Image (cartoon, rainbow, N blue to C red; front, side):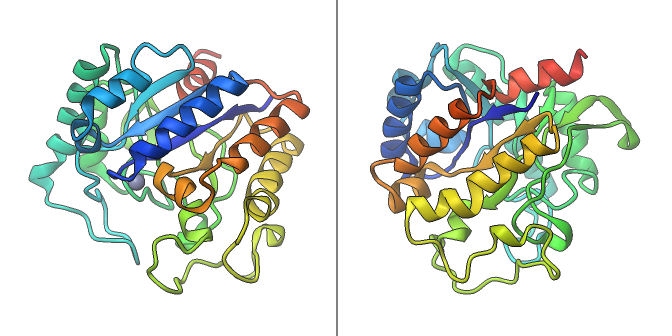
Length: 277
Ligand SMILES: [Zn+2]
């Protein structure tokens, strides 16, 4: 049984308008979601975020750092920030979100994520465990830092000394890069030979239909065919709103999830399922 998990890396001031629309779409479809929130972005519009998300029965509040500081070096998307800032990004962010939303935060997604999750980020892992997170969702790239991120089953960080801490990987394109929404020009992120050639368009996708056809549908179909525990695409509210202000892609995706009769839940639901099986 594959659990469909909608999730949003909510990270910039441009996300707020988008989150208003996203919340409405989720209410329309009665579709759960996890919001990975950057604490600083919440602090800039605290009342609005509280009104939208606090005590909402459909939504999980999770953490996406305090300032979106990168926690490990990446080939093209930034170098790790200073170690002495890690507690602020990992621990104080959690406390801020818990105070703001009045509920426990058990999940963390690091900015940019990594091709091996947090296997090679020992200081981040240590603080994440110490802070009391139950899961991270950080394996969001394919082999050699390629995109799309392939389907990877949940695992624990037992090898690194944290048997209680789960990795719950998302999959697919970072949709902002599939659309060229970062305006950073061409990037070296394709694998050859490609693992899923049906997910590689000839150019940036131009419509919500193309996004669905090249990213969402093939990953949902493959997750079901492979009997994956989870399928969760990598979405950013600011980028969704820039590309598709009517949020048609979300409507299409949620309708497809219902058509395929998939159960839907949050990352916290997925964690409860895998950690207690
Ligand atoms: Zn982010």
